[in-house]
Image (tube, one colour):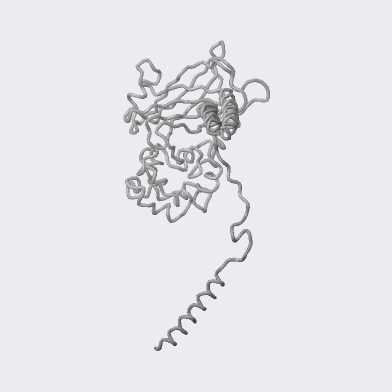
Length: 364
């Protein structure tokens, strides 16, 4: 190619390059050319201090509100593990096991120093029981619990070693259901004459609505649950099959039993509590007046072997839930930290700002 041809080729390429540049160039607007006016705040100590003062007041007021609300929640807790030789449940705790053929009962007397108003919630609490262990969490079959007929007779291998028993599939399978909390708790009020009056305990609506109506279902078909669960075996630690968990309420049997549903939602920590019963509030007067009470326990859940403890909790609730003073303390502490930082910024401004002004005046 001659020099003239090369020059023409370069000119043509340059023209194409210039055209492509023009096509790619954004429109000449303030937004696309980044000519918009901006506000660039300079965060000096004197500018930041008011924000810290303001947020410290907000956090302190929220913390105070949460603390007062939590303080108004009435709660009572009693341990009935039975490790103390003088405990009424000591005999059950030391002699009872999962293989025991006879039931063991004990009665724990206590006194309520403060009356409980409105609905009262009864919880059972366990300590040193790790429901958050990975293998324990995975040991369940959600399809079986959702009423799938095929999963009922063919439980998931994740349930091992609680998948098959005696050649029959276990329903419900897995380690979580096998370790179901099955103590029976009854509460009585004792009057001045020593007469015991049973406190009404409601077992309906203790499970989450989503669990009760979406995640847990009985197999479709006959209303006769014993026929639906025919060809399956109960978990080895259970005294009776899943379709006989609640003899007093046929609609609370099978996989929709609310005690089972509550237990199948694993706890995050090794020490936890789960809702057991609800004591409805009265139209007039306290639900649980001050005075003497007795807790009758049918001891079915041994905990001594793994160093655990059991307790019964009575509690009212508020708009923020149960008794939890930590949240209020956390907000108040954060408010105090923000207030201290605001004071530090103010001091820095007074000291450094004065020095800067003196240096400026001296230079002038």
